[in-house]
Length: 148
Image: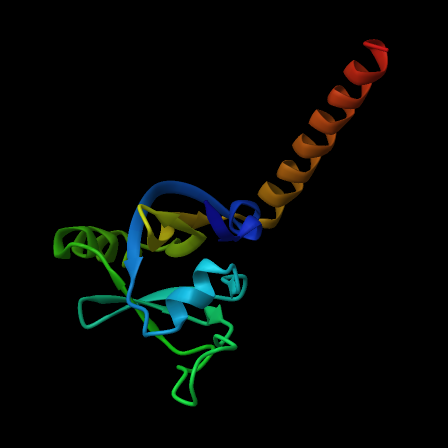
């Protein structure tokens, strides 16, 4: 079950490799995330001292929580194997590669984050994506009209 998505990631980047990472959450953040009060639109991922962190991810504080609710936009650690982090770090150190969050979802009761190794698109690539999407939409519309 997808809790939050990042559609813009597919528009701005060529997604090359996807991974599922756990998120280190505190207390009431889990309930709030499972309720769907999470956003990853402005978030980004950094590798700091051999660990993966997501920054800018928003989890609205749980309304029934205490005064000790964690901050909404705090930096959260992502849980991956060291080998996977090392491989990502090697790729990101190359020019043009970055790690982007794709979606937050539930997997066997755990809140997980799907991340991707991606390469940034140029402006002409984005225009090409828009043209392709528009032509596909026109084709579907004409097929729908012909079936009537």
